[in-house]
Image (cartoon, rainbow, N blue to C red; front, side, top):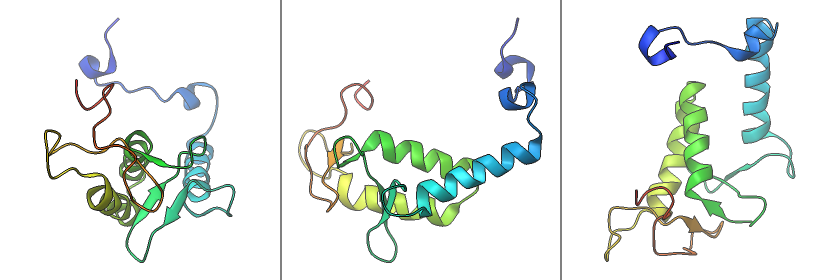
Amino acid sequence: MEGAYYNGQYLNRLERLGYSQAEIDNKLESTFEEMFYGPEGVRLCHCAGPDMMYIEDTGNHDVRTEGMSYAMMFCVQMNRQKEFDCLWRWVVTHMYLTEGENAGYFAWSCHTDGSKNSDGPAPDGEEF
């Protein structure tokens, strides 16, 4: 059996479980809205000024490259350029390393105020 990359047939698992495309679209949209704009204590995304956003790691109360990258991918898949740009701006402003042996990488963890928890990239991701 060939994978989707080879045969061009990308299966929608929710559709195969009997959900209509409208139900799937509504669920994705409501999840996005809750994640980015839901009430305090529910949303994961927080504004940092007029043109930046970050995703909080709720277990550690900080910002991780992993969470930011997943959120940016969600924005791409939902065609949400404004939110993507706000996340990317926060990442480049606060996480991008410009000096030292890790210049060109991103600090894997920052406080929600943008100060770095680490001056190195995630060893399980960016370094490999």
